[in-house]
Structure formats: C-alpha cells, structure tokens
Image (cartoon, rainbow, N blue to C red; front, side, top):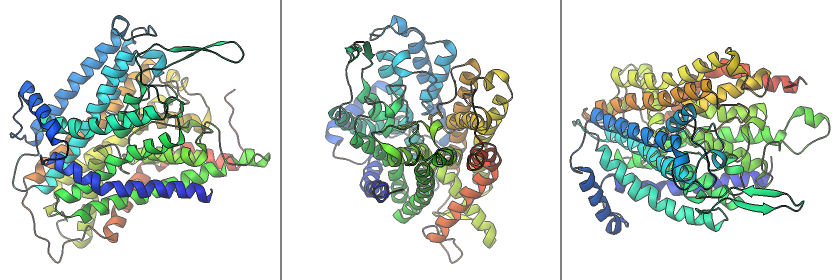
Length: 570
C-alpha cells in the first residue's frame, strides 16, 4: 500500500461526493416534471413520444399498475432481444458473419440484459453481431438502467407523499429518465471515450500483420456507445470478452478513472434525491454515509490484500503485491478500487480478473454483492435496496424503545417490515440454494477450473453475481452450459423482480399513510447513531447469512495460503 494509492482512492471519493448535490438536484427536477436546461430541446420530443404511445402524462398509477406496466415492458424487451440473437445470422450489420446464438445462451443473455445484470456466458466480439450489440444489448442497457432509477423514484415518492394511492406513471418516468438523463450524458461520455482511443465504427474487423509476420484480426465496432451506458447505467456487459481490461474497452488511465466515477455517479446522487423529495437533505446524506463507510472498509481490505500479495510467492522472494490477472497499465490500486466499485454498484464491468485476486481480495467483491449491492448499488436498485435495510433498522430501533418505529414521518408497521424481509431473504435463497446444487452435480462441478475452496468460490461467486444483478464473473467457471444458462437465468429473474415487487408494495403502503409529526420519542435518523445502527444491521444480517459459505471458500483458502497449503488443478 502506498501514499499515491490512497491519494487516488481519496480523490475518487471526493469527486463522487462533489457530484452528489448538483446531479441530485437535476434528477429531482426531471422526475418532478420541472423545467431543466434541456427542456427547450427535449420537451417537444417527449410530447411526441407520449402521443405515439397514447400516454397521458398527467395520469398517475397506483403501485400495482406501475409494477405491472414495468413487467410488461420487460417481457417485450426479452422477446425482442431473444429474437435478435436467434436470427442474427440472417440480419444485417454482421461483418464477422456470426452464427445464430443457441437457444439456452440466448435465453440466459436476454434475461441477463433485461434485468440489468449483463452476465455474459460468451465472448462479445466472437459471438454477437454489431446489430445485436447495438439494437439488442446497448438498447437494453438504457432501458434496464432507467427501470432501476424510476423504481427507486417510485419508492421515494412513497416516503414523500401522504394520503394518496399513486406513486407516479411508469411510462412517463421511463421516458424522462432515458431522454433527459441517460441519453444526454452518454452522448458526451461516448465522445470522450472516442477521444481516448475507443473504437466507434460499423466497419469490419481489422487485419494486421505482426512483427513476426503473422496475421492478427482485431475486433472493432460500435464500442464507445455501449461502454458509456454500460458504465453509467451500472450494466457492465462488455463489447469485448476481456471487458474493461481490453485496450479498446478501456484505453487509458484517464478513461479507467472516469469509468469508475460514472459507475457511482447516479447511484450516489439518488441519496440526495431522496433527501430533497422528503424535505430534508440530511436524510440523504445519512444514507450516503452508510454507503461510504461500507465502501471505504471494503476498499481498504481489498487494497491491503492485493498489495500484500501471496505468502507463497513472498517466501520465494517475489514481492511487490499480487499482479496476477491485472492489467499493467492500471496496477494494483486501480484494479482493487475498480473491483470494489463495480461490485458495490451492480455494474459487473472488470478491469482485472477477480479469479486471480488473493482469497481476501476476492472475498470483498463477493461480500459487496451478497449484501444486496446496497453500497451505492445499481442505479436505483441500490437506493431501494438500502431503504429496505433502513426499514429493518428503524424497526429494530423501535423495538429498543418500545414504540412504533417512524422514518421521515411515516410509521413503519408490520406490512412494511414483512415486505422488506421478503425482499432481503429471497437473495440468499438464490445465492446459496443454487450453489449447493452446483457443487454436487457432476456436470456442474466439471465447469470449475480449480479444485478445493477456490473452485467452491467460483460457483458461489457466479450465483451471487447473477442473483445480485451484478454480472461480473470470477473468470474461472465455464458458464456456457445448459445447467448454468438456465439456473443462472432463474437466479437473475428472481434477484431482480422478487425484490422489486415487495419494494413497490411498500411504496404503495407508505404513500397512503399520513405524515406523523416528529415528537420527543421520535428516533433521529440523520445523525451518527442512526448511521451506525444501519451499518450494524447490514453487517449482522450479512454475517449471519453468509459467513458459513464464506468460511468454506475464501476464508479457508486464505488460511490454507498462510499455512503453505496449495491446491493444484492437475
């Protein structure tokens, strides 16, 4: 660990905090239907879209109608994306003559992209045509990201409104999110990435002659447009198989730093949106403080573990930290920071192979996802996931003082607590249940590249990543099999929608309640005590749920490493 490494980390944190308030202000204005600096140019476009879609922007929906609209929207997206992959060999913009994608891989990939997971059991440049990358994958990157954001806004409205049965209009929210937020930022962002050397072309792959005289084919294509939204929308699905470690997918140290900033920007700003909408910005800062404490702790452990390296190598005189699986252009600190950022958010893009991290270094990304990716989290998804933990925390506080818990003026009663627990507990059912099956089924075990605890971690990481809608892989598991394609798709669907539906039920329940004035017995939710309580609840729930599985994987692997026990795949 070095001083310059910590300066990079602190600079990153400072920039994120600096963006929270201005970006939060802009997001609030967009979702409140107020004028912004883009309104002159975009309001006519918005009006045309409403007319074509038959949408009345003044008509709002209750939580159930809002949720049904969202589900129908995703069914349509799934069918379009599945068809594009199955017929890609017959469609244009396929210069590499990619064949049709198999049914089970098409199913897994379509589910992956509509759930904002972007898990990839394929190599992008060797499997997907330009048309599928653009019209299918990039298109869904925008819509799945926008869905997460508007669902968070709907839940926030539940806390902010009183005595009403509506939480907004899904079609209006999704239109405004895409038109006023995601598209404008991505246009500027994409141009920046092109300036750094990222390809953006419909031309064919490029053939080059190496110094040895051999022929090498270099994949290019409409890369920058996909990378911009995959990072900003915390999607993570890469144009290239090597993702953000590929020189065309992440050309420079500056592009690497900006990509990390874009992963956190909207998710962090939504805490400010929450504070503004409930009428007390300090509420938003308190939630951001919870996220920040967990994030800094994760970065510290991951950076320390990777800088320390492998004890077996150190004993042989090989020092300098663990550089296995890392891009030399980025090094240890940028790789460790990127790994924590991409798993604290549900992004899943990687600039280093997590399979090559030390046991404890690889455990931190795993824990980030197992906690439900509420440390900033995916755009929107992290916010509504964190609010579920807040509900549990204030319920615990209410038990301590013997009165009905309250949060931002709303009484938290049995229905809200039950829905929150349902949403939180469905995740470990998928993480642990599918892992238990995969480690005893011979065909699934055959997909692991390593024996012992590391092989177990590969399987656990895969199902955790998919259920948490992250999409990053440990890179040591052959996932393109019938078992992993089908079970992984089920995990992604459950992880996304079985968490959304209870959250939306909470939004409807809270919106119908009256605002309760604060009293002498009201637990303050903007100070250090509240922040500590929420952090404690998150860690206790996570520890009780996942410590046994972690003990079988990265923890025992670390202890074996320190004891000089090594595992061979031969």
